[in-house]
Image (cartoon, rainbow, N blue to C red; front, side, top):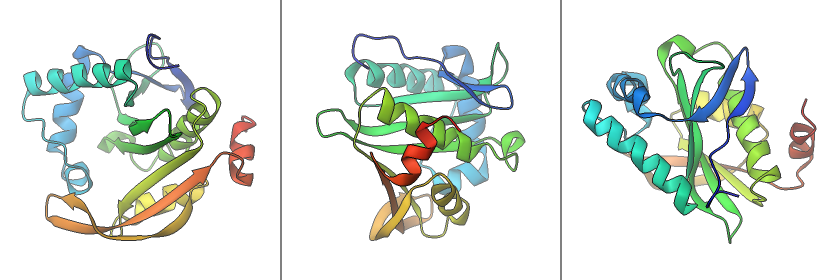
Length: 192
């Protein structure tokens, strides 16, 4: 599905927003995200300027073409500024697994966007990619991501010690996952 195919637009996600491939013109959103203290706190996003952001966007496209990653921009359908990022890292098509990543810029926070975004990508990974097991990992200190995981149907499986490097050092990490066939997953896939 990924290799040799165009990255699809996934939408609508919620309230007129869709997930679409990143474009070079979106580089400013990555620079803004790298400068946002809340995003930097939980993500190692080292994009200092527009050329670095454009390079990162080009790498996103390369990862799509190689089948190792799928990252989208959350933006208004029909055009508008990027308000977030969501996608799959560590995609293993043969092994049937991937890890979801996401963040929202300040104007998009507190609007109930993270859960529908994660649910939409979960449906896509199961239904279109045919993956079997999906992970959502976050620092044990990142309580909002823990709530997103739970609301999106990702079961808590345990804590991995010293597994995640953040700006302030190594963090223990919660591991959440959903497996094809989970009761919650069947509900999400029904298009609720």
